[in-house]
Image (cartoon, rainbow, N blue to C red; front, side, top):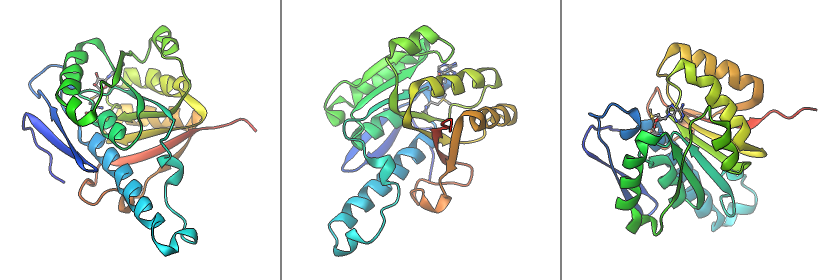
Length: 232
Ligand SMILES: C[S@@+](CC[C@H](N)C(=O)[O-])C[C@H]1O[C@@H](n2cnc3c(N)ncnc32)[C@H](O)[C@@H]1O
């Protein structure tokens, strides 16, 4: 998988191609496209496509289909945290997660809006967006949780914000929902605290590297699926 600092990153999702504009010179990390978002989208696309092609084959009734529990997007409500330029949210929308809200902090909104406008012909509509600071409980409430899916990619890099991020994830995801996380270690301190906090509230499943999309996988990138721990 190649990453580039070119001003436009292309991401093919099913039969469509998103073109995401980035500005690596900006002071906000959210105006760049981060690779774990592409890894997450292409992982889900891989299994969506392979499960739908195996449905039409004769062995379909006997062979268990991997990740079907994650891929039933129809009618589901989703939110992305720290969406930046929107690669994960737009990609998942094209995979059928149509009721999705993309969120980030105020200074990142112009880059997000620009990208949604640029890709509107591919997306076919304006996706919903909202400002959301992870520590802002009023904003969280206004978003009307719970959500069936909470999406996040490459959002764990500041130790001070990790507690708010995990609390926001917990408040936003439904008891039966999933947190889908594209992940790479960006700060050892943030990494340690994030997983300590997640272990208190979520059951955590790490996707084996072999299950990632072969062209969108690299050693440092992971996809995690988390569900709320339920009291017995
Ligand atoms: C490294 S960027 C990843 C952007 C995008 N998810 C991607 O993969 O291209 C991290 C994102 O998290 C957002 N973020 C950081 N701290 C935040 C906070 N406290 N509340 C809301 N968003 C935050 C940033 O604005 C940025 O867009």
